[in-house]
Length: 502
Image (cartoon, rainbow, N blue to C red; front, side):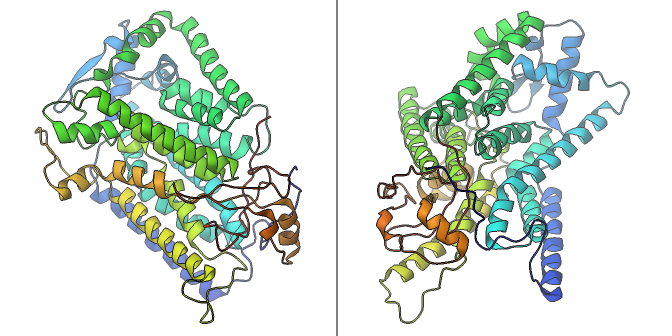
């Protein structure tokens, strides 16, 4: 059944913060000020990259403008040996105007534009992630955003994106616009953003696989078609560079880094290289592990989408891409931010959910649900702390070939990839609310949901979402709601708009 246009419980008026006292508002402002200062301090104390990657882009594009082949550009590097322009021709065309900025302040102007665009992208994507949760829980929007934005800026992936002068947040905006904005509205343009992101930097192509795994055939075809059409259009203007990139340079993995063992490479392949350096891991072993991660991760992502939890589904997909890629720099792993939000939202007590009291037995469903929520909050704290500390921001690893030899070194040198693997297993999946319960939730009344027989998957060992009693399809309702407390580790009363395959 299609979702009914009902208002979620406890949702305040647009722009309203609800009945909050002046004292509570003052405390909220103080918390926001402290978080902003802490985020700024993290930038001051972290490694300063001085827009290193942006300088390479501009140098390569000026080389190209001078009449040289774009992919012949190379510059020496103390760690990697040689550095190259590694992006598809579309990215080169989009960045080319920046290389034409004249004068000695060209780098400063370009870096300023990149930083402002990245900051705007962080704010916009944080709004998309946080506001639905804040509205459902009755939190003031200004306070929710005031807390969430500096927390997002403090994460290593954001710091590295800004200080290297990277374009990753543009890709995140395109992917989230597709999956959190266009898809829930049933837009025929769903997939265009993912297709453009894939044509710009390849690794967002994992989300095309996600669309296929969730049986969004039309959106998957749109994404693949967009990527192909844009690539062919660019080839009309850059035939030589396009032919060379797609037939030669794409397959030359050495161009992205001759030292995959360095801690900056937070992929599964990087982890294995650090265990085997100065040699390389057996390719069959790496491929077998990657296949297992991809199958398991996308299986969980598909279950999340079918259960109505699009945010968990896309987060799991992003983590799969980070782990499976041969080279994954810390600025690629944006997906810790939505993962922490999912964990926090699932871990907090839901509106209208009575806390476990003395009358509840320790082994009862209410107490068990409370314990599960505490564990999700603990995992959220660990994941956020790890994503802020990161791997390269506060360590000077040097250039020596050093094999991982002890548990402490293994943890520090592989922190992000280990967190990603743990989240692929532990990230909770929240299920959609059946239609009958949606109506009662909207009116504030109670209803027995046991007739639906639905359960929710919260980990790799969770159950399956079952809506046979209602005749519906998981994920169609667009809402998450009250759980069967004896079986379902889900967050209650959530509003997640999702769209089934068309």
